[in-house]
Length: 341
Image 1 (cartoon, helix red, strand yellow):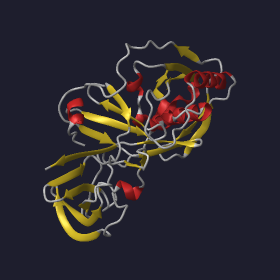
Image 2 (cartoon, rainbow, N blue to C red; image 1 turned 180 degrees about the vertical axis):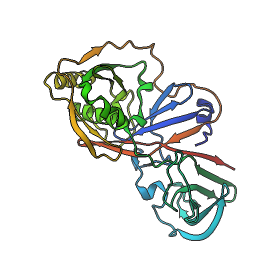
Image 3 (cartoon, rainbow, N blue to C red; image 1 turned 120 degrees about the vertical axis):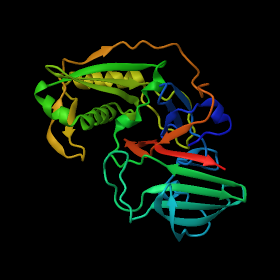
Image 4 (cartoon, one colour; image 1 turned 180 degrees about the horizontal axis):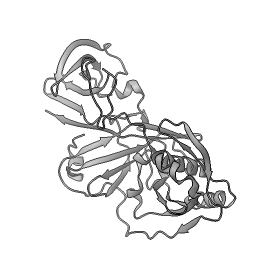
């Protein structure tokens, strides 16, 4: 999304990863070029959230994500139109009282790739014909038209490692551990490495009760044993903006819990393929192998929006829901651009 107003002054023209944790109400905004991070409450009434009467945010439903909720006309099919030289099926609907509380009318258009087109994702996967959203446009009154263009759509299986917020904790508390798994499992782990890393995050989250977002920088090295290093991150650094904030497990307790699990031979990780099917028996960490490394904090910086580079920004967002125990950590991250004319 192309930043405007004060946000354009704060962020530069680098692509950002913006991860929204709806269990705490905190947004992590990472500059993908510079690597620096800003932390702020999730912005109200953004594309992925709605605001309640108490000015708290909740994650949008599927209908709300396409802005189909609320009173107004049912979307009407108006035919095929070329969007970025691709034939798209276009649907139109009028929204009343949009944005909410303004009593204004707005017209939304949704353009989906036509079923007559063969379309691949950002990788090499051929997408199912039809249904890939290419553009949303919003007309307010007679003067303002806003376009949301969706680029580089991918249908790859989502992985926890796609949502690494560790750059936002460079100057904050964390605990760093390494454990060893039997070298006899090395070849199977290597073939299914992304899934194995996800398994590490899932198991650490399950054992400690922390959100998968708080398990970062998972690294796997193959020597005589399979050596896995990971970090446990501290609680959310600022108060968030959600109706029900999940109570987070203390970092000290989480670290002690995982240490005990390994030492008591209770830390095992499933080995599955990219579709989630088991390809081998779960592997257990060597109970005597866990080592904690001291983490040296960098000088503290402001936890709010960083001063960053001054200009405009393309925001990267993707939507995924991660549910852990009784609470949900919902992460947003969909790649698109928006501009207004």
